[in-house]
Length: 165
Image 1 (cartoon, rainbow, N blue to C red):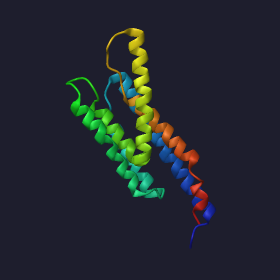
Image 2: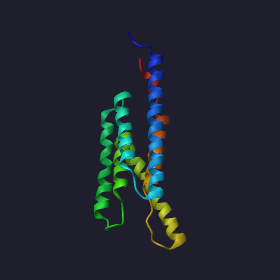
Image 3: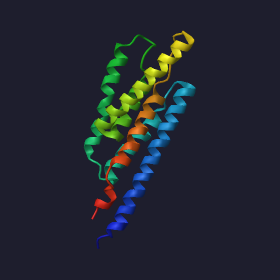
């Protein structure tokens, strides 16, 4: 017996909210940990990857979203070209890849652009105010970009829940 379309729509809606809440919570935890300790836990990254898997398995999201993880390649190149001890760290690279798997390639590129523009603006204003050169955590800015893009995906997406029939 087939479930009622309204029931299916409600089920998809609540699963989407659960996955999105988990993603936002993990992004917040990554940001706080990077600001306080300047490190990003692998467990948090694994949690973000699990939200990507949940989106693909339960929410009829295309498996191509997983390809968004390839957004880590430019970050990896930037880390390899940077000087020892300065530049992008491994946590930033892992965050870009794991959040890219949730957002898809197009969303990951957009989130990275938002995060990097905000980061560069922040660094510019801090250098202008202090005149000192110091390191800044990148993860909070990448997390903000990812949160904005996932929110925009939810807002701009036609109610997929009504399309299930």
